[in-house]
Image (cartoon, rainbow, N blue to C red; front, side, top):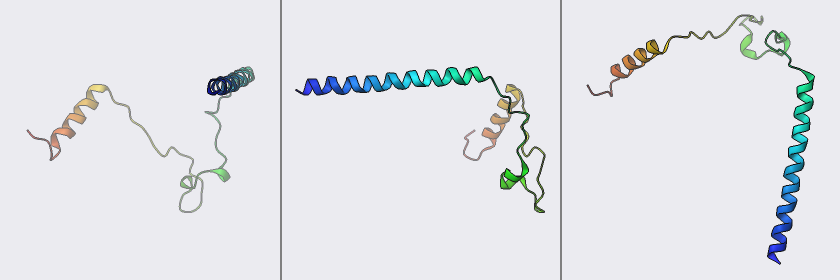
Length: 92
């Protein structure tokens, strides 16, 4: 009797999983047919902007708030080594 319940439960879960897989594949194929939308050039409307994008006078800040500088691997390694060697817990 337990084997029949196990087989029935496994069958139901398998059917549920396969139906979800098919629905997901159909949804993905419909999304692919819509085309790619480029959101990089879209600007956020100032009325819906995050509070940190407002200055102290309540004006919208339209400038980059963080700039990331890229460096080569050797320079990064030498800076990390210097930081590690200058730490107080490092033994020389």
